[in-house]
Amino acid sequence: MSGNCMSLLEILELINEYFWYIPLVLIVCLGLYGTFKLKGIQIRDFKEMFKVTFSKEEHKKGTLSTLQVFCVSMGNRIGVGNITGPVMAITVGGPGAIFWMWIFAILGMASSAIETTIGQLYKVRGEDGEYHGGPAYTILNGLNMRRVAMFVAGVMILMYIVGFVSMEVSGMTNALCGAFDFEYNNVFFAILLTALTAGIIIGGLQRIANISLWLVPAMALLWLVLAVVSIALSAGGIVNAFVMIFQYAFNVPAAIGGTFGAMILIGMKRGVLSNEAGIGTITNVSSMADVEHPVKQGLSQALGVLIDTVISTLTALVILSYGSIETIMNVKKTYDLDATNLLQYVLEDTIGGAAPYLVALFLFVFAFTCLMGDYVIGENNLAFITKNKKGKYAIIAILLAIVFLSSFYASDEIIAIVDILLAVCGVINCLVMFKLAGKAVELYHDYRAQKAAGKETPVFSKDILSDTSGITEWE
Image (cartoon, rainbow, N blue to C red; front, side, top):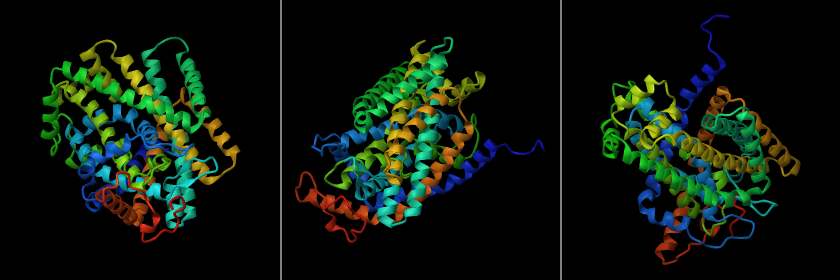
């Protein structure tokens, strides 16, 4: 065989690199459309986003509140990508990549508002009393396209139960084994992770929601504290970090090289892969909330995109506060550091020897909250395909097997395949949203009209819509 033949991984990465242009363009268009049609919802309803997310309104027994769903969805959003993603964006695209990550996050708030509002509109209530929704449910109930809906549900199960779980467990194991080096440590952590996963998912959605309710905010706050301390002790300082972000927003520093287009692409891609706005994946979780009006979830999940971006920005500021981009790249090249190791190096140099253990802890917890969300999304799509309880038990068994095996083995090919499948979901979701976005606009206008009329808590009635076909859970 010729030595010039590409490996499977190289082929997958090539497909991944070029195919992602399609969903990225569609996601930007959806964000621009949402920003215009929802009249600058990112600014106009900023205060309302906090109000609806952190309200203590009652919800039906057996269902989830807006706050519970928000924490589960944030557990799924805030993951390893918030720690390694911004570092990778800086070292590949330069400090300016963070600027473009912000721009696309602002647009993402609007696209997230549209997709999660639509997801709420077409949710259904299962035999278990819990609400279910997401792209598959929206495609079936909103567009009556069963085959496409089944395909999307199958892709979601494959991505989350196999792909993302494998990636997250591998990341957790590597972090733990790197921080705690002892004989057979990988076996110990494999058993520990499998036992923890089993204990949580057997408790069901309510247990996952209750754990997320305190764990996700606690870890986000602790990451904020760690980042602030590191930035305060850095030689470069936070002012230098922001100066570099804006200085290189429209040009790539010579220490990195590359094109302006590549910088925009890496900033956008890292943002989308982290906050998941426009891809449709978060609607699997957001549709489970029991709310009086679908727009409440749209507002709450728009806030989720913002908070996710703040977490990513904190990581970026830790790196950029360390020194000039030339200094940062010199450290990376001298010690041959990947994104995680570079972050550990900077933290260790600023806060001391505890840094590797702290990074390992955050990687572990962030990845584990993602894993919990992965199971929720996988089970949600399984419920769409079959109501047979044997299927649920099979999913749990497969998940636990993957958790155990992924503690020993990680496949770069799986990561590349998951990236491609995520892009496929993004394309399908955006096309569906462009078809149904008009309903999100109608819903938003209804919500604003009720607020303008002095109604503290708007209540939705499907009669206000021009087309009510496929809507089953709203009077």
